[in-house]
Image (cartoon, rainbow, N blue to C red; front, side):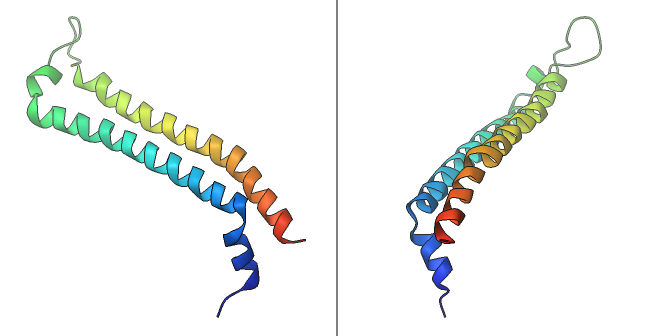
Length: 102
């Protein structure tokens, strides 16, 4: 059983554009996150002396700011996706719904 509205939406050129853009940014940001996160984990696994270097004369090691950088990177790429989703993707969705409801 097929819904004609769903069929119209799936064949709409802006829906195809939306899917392409959403998938593209989703996979790109996923790949970046995996490289950063697993890179940090690999650094922990294979080069502990590098991360154990103290910063200055204190007890804080180099691993702490790098780990904090991973967390900040995650927040930044989430913000990038949310901005695109709330702007470009929502505009495309509204255009699709407007065209299909005619």
